[in-house]
Length: 217
Image (cartoon, rainbow, N blue to C red):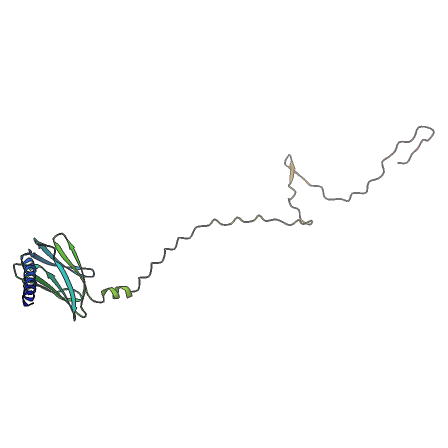
């Protein structure tokens, strides 16, 4: 019985040592440069890498600080570590340092609450897109700017309405057209005045043939 327990312990220890040896012999990713670029919503922390396998990133908030641990990486900078103060409004400091033999820690401190970050991997870069706390909520609460009023079109010139022709009511007492003067050889002719016209008389009838020698005129 004791022999079996001893063999089980030996096998378990051997498996742990094998896993540790594999982790130790795995090529660590080298971080050769760090850049902090301001953006419209915060900053981008760009870690340029070379060699090694694709590292994993774990983030956690601690008070007003965002901590990102990058495992299986080694920091290879001429100055040993990286630090920058006040890279953007709402962010007071960004620090990159070696945590242990195979881990690099990125620490981002906010002015108030802890900032948030999105991790993007592409090519030979690891990008942490960092935004200060409350930036999104503040942008959503801002009322939209009122739309500019549409320009008023110029007034269209209208032709004046034609005037209706004057219509003179008939008047029996007035002459529409005056009687023009008549001149014959330079001597004006007096227009005849209105005179009384007697009623028509019966037409004269010739007398009948015979002995009658007179007739009514």
